[in-house]
Length: 329
Image (cartoon, rainbow, N blue to C red; front, side, top):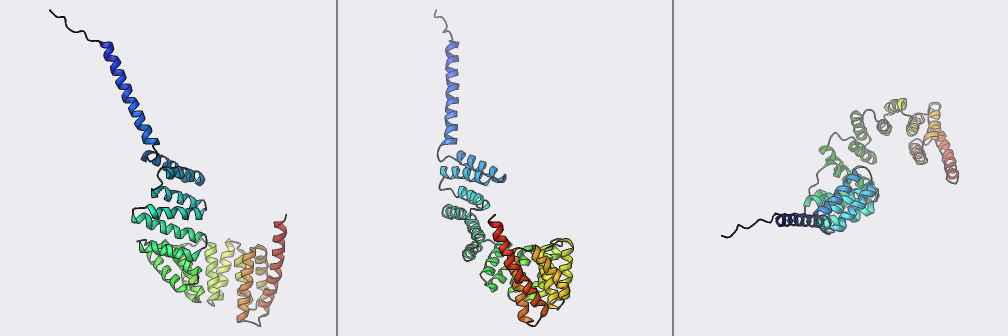
């Protein structure tokens, strides 16, 4: 009689352990390959997520480094460039952002991604005050389906800076039709109307903007200036005084002084110009001086306006000299 075979439990245990360890090792290798293989999805997403976390924290330089690692892993993926471009934009590195958006338009497969890249390129040129180059970028974005109020508002502003007022007005009209509650759009359109000497239309736009944002002192001051240009001096004086009750804005003092000087009321104009000289920037003071010269073209024999001009022209070189001294300290 043949005895039954004995089961070698030790051998079975050893084989089982080796099998388990082998599976674990194979899994570890697979995981490492997923994470570290040069073109792996996992590594790319790891770096983009890290970059996005840093971006949300306002650490744009850290985000740029993380996105750069992602781009090195997948140099033909548009997403890495788009994310890094956004970080460059917020870090005010606009030319670097433009270079990345070039790569987005090169590698992107979705129309919407390319459209956003052209829109953002326009925004970069706008920040660089390169208005002529911003316009075609916004135009391409519009042709590709961008219809938001902002793209028309931005392109309209660029046209305005180029003194192409008809195109600017068309764009601002479209922007306001798209978003009639956006205060900035009415301010931009009022600037176009003022440039076209359609001053009463500028008053209407700014008055509506003030209704939308009644606590904005600078906006109310702009309304006062438009009222003056439209020949509504009584309203302009009321508006300027309303501003100055809550905000001591030097340029509003100058506007109020101009209203009084245009009426030959130097007694009321003098303290306003005195305050304006004390509290306005050099650039603002030069603009205020030009405003008086423009008023004198209409009223060349005005004693009050000549007094204002002499006062301002005397203040400009003094302020310039004081600025040079402070810069050399």
